[in-house]
Length: 449
Image (cartoon, rainbow, N blue to C red; front, top):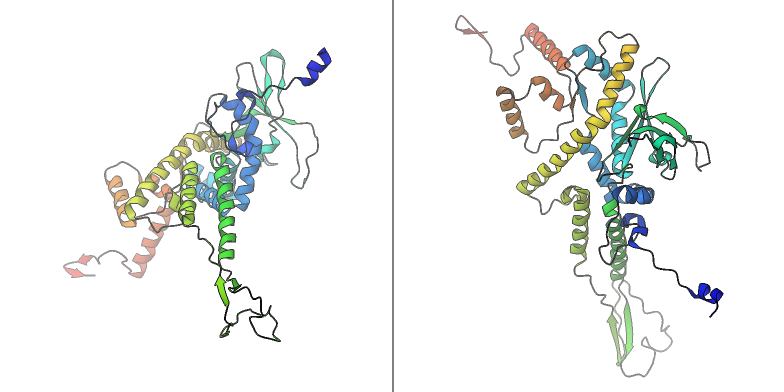
C-alpha cells in the first residue's frame, strides 16, 4: 500500500474528553456515563452562549421556567431594596433619584438577566446635568468570541480586558441599537472596568463569565414539556369513542338490512340500533398511562431541586403541603436568597451604585454627599406566613435592642422619617378632633375625658 493510500485510509481518532463540552444544556443531550468536567472557566465560556439562548427560549415559552424566573425575581428584590445611611437628607435625596431613574424596575430587570442569562452588565454613566444614569447592556454584547493576546502580559478573554495581574481593567462591548434585528460588524467599544458592574455568580476558580441558573434544568424542562404534550395527545385519543362492527359468522352481509347504507353506523344521542344475528360491536379501550401523573410530579421535583426553589412554589400544587413542611421549605429557600442578596447583590450592585451616586452628587455641589458614607441595604421583608407570630417576634427584637425602629421600618419598605412624621401628624389631628384610636381615654380628676 502506497503512502497516499495509507493517508486516505487512515481514520480520524475519536475526540478526547477535553475536546467535548460537558454542559448538557449546551450540547442538548445527556451523557450515558459521567465524564470528567474540564476547567470551570473554559467550560462556561464554551457553552454559555448556547445555554443562554436556550434558557431565554424556555423563559419566554415554558410556563414552568417563566414561573421560576418570576419567583427568583420576587424573592431577591421584590418591589425594590431600601438603601439608607441613617442621614435623613442623604436618604431623601437618594430616594428621589431612585424614583426618577426607576431604579426598582432596573433591579427586577437585572435579576431577570442574572437568572436567565447568568450575568447582568450595568454601565455607570452620567446625564447632561452630571447625575448618575444606569445603562443595562445585554450579555451578548460582551462577545464571548473576542479573545486577543496583548503586550505586556495583558490580554482580552471573552470581551474582558485583563492586566498582567489578571485583574479586569476594561470591557469591550459590541455597539448595537435597540432597533437592530440583525447583528452587523462594528468595532467594539472599550469601557473602563470602573464604569462597569459585571454581576454574576462565580461557581469555580477562573470563571470570567456567568452561566445561566437554568443550565442544570434545561434538558429536564424540555423533556417535561415533551412529556406533557404527549400526555395531552394521549388524552385526546383516549377521549375518542370508536366502535368496530365484527362479522362473527363471516357472511359479510349488510348489518343494517337491505337498501341501507352499510357505512351509516354512527351513533347519536338516543339512537338504538338492532343488529342482525352474527354481528357484534366492539369499542376501543386505549391503555391508560398508569403512572403519568406521578412521573410529571417527579420531573417537577427534579426541576425544583435544580433551581433550588420549593416544589410547591414552582408547581403551585399545595395538596400535599402542610404548615410545617411549607415553613421548613421556605426557611431554607429564604436562607439561600438572603445569602445571594448580601454576598452578591450588595457588593456587586448596590454598593458601587451608592458610591458612584455620592461621588457625582459631591461633584455637582451637594455638601452632604460623601462616597465614604456607610450604606445599609434592606431588602423587602418576605410575606408573613404567620402575621401574629412575626409581629410579636419583631416587637421582642425591638424590646431586646437587637434591631432599631429604623431597621424594622426599612424591612417593610418604608422610610422611618416619613413614618414618624405621618404618625405625629395623625396624632396631632386626632387630638384636635378628640379622637382616641387604639388608646383608652385619659382620666382627669377621676373622671374619664
